[in-house]
Structures are given as structure tokens and as C-alpha cells.
Length: 198
Image (tube, rainbow, N blue to C red; front, side, top):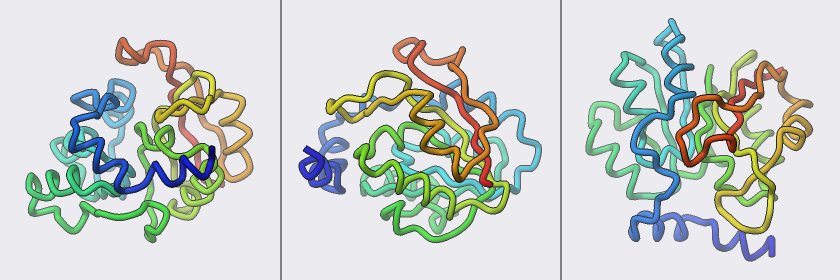
């Protein structure tokens, strides 16, 4: 099963999802938990990464609100090409590529339906890669799904206990709690979190 997933969840898989407009994870705008987090950031020069950016609603919001150092990466051509056309002045910050091959450092990494789209076998790699991409005391901030992990997906679920076990060695757990302001289809099924690099 794991080998099948690894073959399926590749660039071609995501390309087909976009071509077929099979993007059920797309909420059409920045989600409320992330909006509220972004709205309280005062330093708009912080270096921020959004992996698996998709249609870029978080990127749109950050750029529109004066953030000057926001980077995005996605393995799928279509959303990246769309964002590059929309923001030609920011083209060098809109990257087509594999997150796990990316090499830079950031103050904040925003997690929005990227973790849940990965083969669950990749979760330890995700934690290590996030750690390497953050400056000291840098943070991962975002939402993780809170429903049982099964072979069905993506999205793949997980639990608070699993996430604590997974991240605690490399990150200080600043917050992980049920999101009180999820969109209706995800109500009661999301955890808002802030993890700081140790």
C-alpha cells in the first residue's frame, strides 16, 4: 500500500487533480484561523514560506497586506504558473519544485493542507525538513486535520497525540488546540498549532 501511495502522490497525480478541477481542499480564500494569526504579525519583513501553496489564497492575503518577503513552492505546474502570471514582480519567490529538495531558511512556515496531502510515511521526513528550513526559534503555524488516520486519502488524518509524538523532539509545542473558527465542512476536525524550532 505504501509503495502504491508513493507512486500515486507525485507531480503527475497533482497535475491531474488541477486539470480535472478536483481541488476540494481549496476554500476560495485564506481560512479564518490563519487570517487571525497573520493579522497579529507586526513585522511584515519576516521571511515566510507556504509549501504546497496551491491556488495561493494565503499568499494573496499576505501580499495584499504588505508582507514583503513571502515565498511559495508547489510541485504542480498549474497553480505556480497562475501565481507567476498574477505576480510577475514576485516571480523569483514563486517556486515550482519539490519541497523536500528546497534549500533556504525562514522565520515562519505556514501549513495549510500540505501535511495531510503527503503519504503518511513521509511525516518524519516532513518534520526534519521543516526543522532544517527554519531559522533558530522559527515557527511552523497552521492547521492539521483531527480525524482518524486511515489508508483513505488524501487528505490523510491524524490526532493530537500523534502530532505531539511526531514534532516534540525537534519543536517546542507553543499551541495545539481545536480550531474554534474552522470553515463549516471542517468544523471540529482541525487543530490550530504553533510549533517553534528547538
